[in-house]
Length: 374
Picture 1 (cartoon, rainbow, N blue to C red):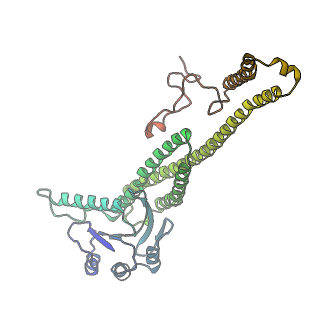
Picture 2 (picture 1 turned 90 degrees about the vertical axis):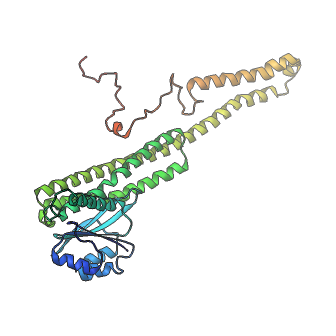
Picture 3 (picture 1 turned 60 degrees about the horizontal axis):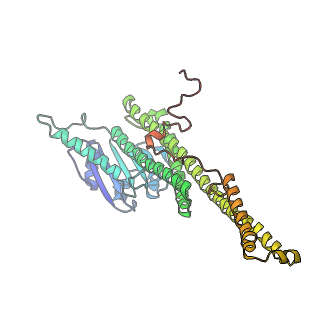
């Protein structure tokens, strides 16, 4: 179990229960982060049960992760179950015990986003304390717990955007690969991405609804004033964007999956078509060989020389094959997609992720849209 304690006035630092009791009795605001696989083990159990005196139900939720994003209000504190995405593409569950004088975050897996928030707070407090002629840091100049809570939630939510951006690029790459040559490995990647998007949607949607509830009931978080509400409303907007992106990417993955299946089916049809063409070519050859192989006296008496053998026996079959190939090519039956080849092969434009949201592929940039004045 890794423990980290950051006081919001820059004066105290410690992780033992005695130090925490002193901070609670003195009214000093602080943020404690508990990270590890076994929250029920000491010293976490001692801190959560004996020092902070949290409700047994809240402690039970922290011991058994896998909770739904929610807000539970208790007489002395508020429990927020939050989810975020790390840089490694892993969903992390964070239980946040929020009170007017402290914040306690509990998570089982490592969360670099929370570490970066802690480093920024420590750097900010050290810069204020080293300003020439500045008075000692005071509670009035230190960040309030609700501000620190915003930083924590903001770091967790912002972790979704790089993961979704990488997912968007992977979907585009898979679409191009599928159009070139579909494989079973691509099918596995599509199923993995679809499973990831479903898992992300299961936590993003209730977390979005949770913040809508918090904005509707300002008294759920002590210290939530009008200015802090603006910042939390910005988090709510981010969650709406993430929810929309997850739904959009899920539709794209489903479309890519359908494209993969249809492409494989089309290629199977092409193979069957090519085999049918081969059988069709050999059909007149079999007829000719069977016809001239008949033992009629008229043919036996007249087809006796080598030039007749070359011209009739071989030349006719070659002409039939050439005629069928030319006929099939003109109809487009010998192409890989079953269509007549275009004058110039078209390629999908390579655009950036930002341009893809603003580029309408159905319109040509040099051609005015209908109804536009010339």
